[in-house]
Image (cartoon, rainbow, N blue to C red; front, side, top):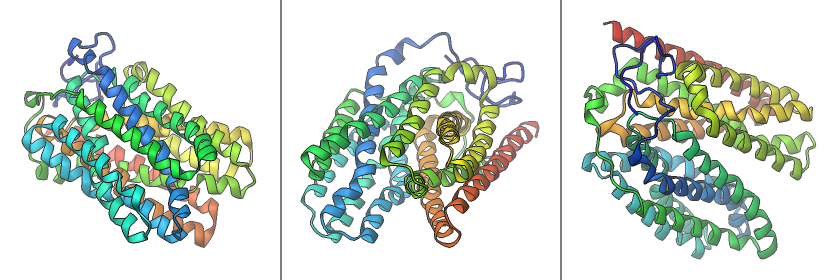
Amino acid sequence: MYQGPATDRHPAAGIPGAPGHPFPSISFLVQPASWSRQTFSFALFFFAYYGYVGVFSPYASLYFAAKGLTATQVGVLLSLMQAMRVIGPNLWGWVADRHQRRATVLRLTALAAVVSFTGIFFGQTFAHFFLAMVVFNLFASAQNPLSEALILAEMRGDYSPYGRLRLWGSVGFIASVALAGPLLDRYGVDTMPWIAFALLVLVFASSLRMRETAHDDGAKPKASLPDLLRRREVIAFFASTFLMIAAHASLYVFLSLYLAQIGYSNTVIGLMWSVGVVAEIVFFFYQAPLFRRFGVRRLMFASLLVAALRFLMIGFGAQSLVLLLAAQAMHAVTFGVHHSASIITLQRWFSGPLQARGQALFTSISYGLGGTLGGLVLSALWDTFGSQAVYLAAALFSLAGALAAALSYRWQNDEERQ
């Protein structure tokens, strides 16, 4: 339910101190009737898409290695998932916004992802797998930003259902990770592509249930994409998200290796990953009253500062199981809070005819460039200075992200006073 411009009198209504711009507020009382008709489709989409991620990301390396590829070749293939996030989302976001057919483009790219994934089944050489991964990820990288844009357009300023829908992605991820392991142990690593393929088919099936949502052009002042990307507050916002995801490469790339290095068993390492995802699920379920109570800006700062603390705890205190558990529970803040606060903040500039491109830019800059470059920088630090240097650098990235976020919010208010 759209409640008008955010003001200082209601800090939960987005960013405090923003009377000049109609920033969507967060309603917790009434869910629009039109939203309920798509709830199941969005929840199923998130469950299936992140279920696929939970199968492919952890186990694809085992599959490619079983095909006789070297460790370097496997690393190159998996890096294509991040690299194509720089290209794919922007291409399909532009197509979806230009033709105002987000659901249609989502369906087409979901179908193309299913078809192109079949190339994984028949590959035997590095060149074949490289081509298959490029084509497949060109389409698969569109799924998350297009679905987010479709959902946010459907909500029309009422973001209260978002967390309880997004949590189904976390449920799908943890369920697939937990179930795929025993299946691969029993039937072999060649089972992995079949499980991933079934989940991609489910992604496509759920996209067929989604309807087009009209652009709400009147809710925001009109601005071109180039004009927005020249605004200092937008640049600072993307710099902040870039740094935060770059910092999280210390987890996604190195956490399992680091914990094994200091003596934890595979069982404990798996448990630590599960703790983080469960904490994330709990946050998404209960996020609405937290945003109402503290507002987007405060929670954004909290996520960045807590991230700095978390990475220091992992880097210098992971030998203590208690500290490690606490650090992993902080994933609810460093990922869950940051993701939701970023999505809501993004709507300040990218809505209506720019919605899909805004989500695409967020995915490309943060997860594409941030994840890729962060992994490369932290890899060099690991090789040169050791594992603890990785988590010290991640903490510094987070603090730099907090500074960039502070500048973004400050400049937003400066723009309003002009």
